[in-house]
Image 1 (cartoon, rainbow, N blue to C red):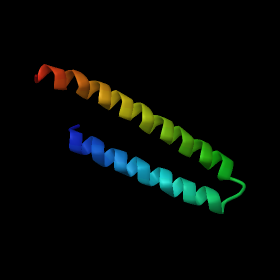
Image 2 (image 1 turned 90 degrees about the horizontal axis):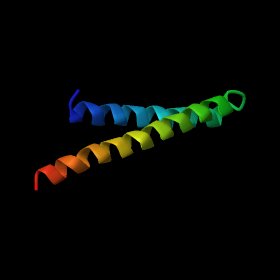
Image 3 (image 1 turned 120 degrees about the vertical axis):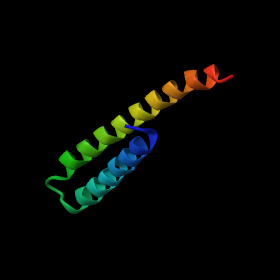
Image 4 (image 1 turned 135 degrees about the horizontal axis):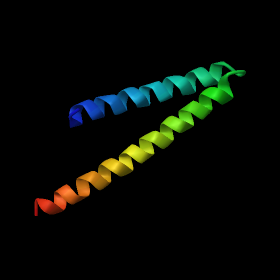
Length: 64
């Protein structure tokens, strides 16, 4: 899986999160469950961002 695939996957995950948020606003009964899923997706994206930034840091130092 290359960087372009990862970016595409991240965009799809963000789109899913946005759809879940919209759906949660419509459905009051299932809303809390969907919001919880959306928060977990946010957590996942934050962790991925941290991991990717840590992975890129050593590479940028090695290129110097």
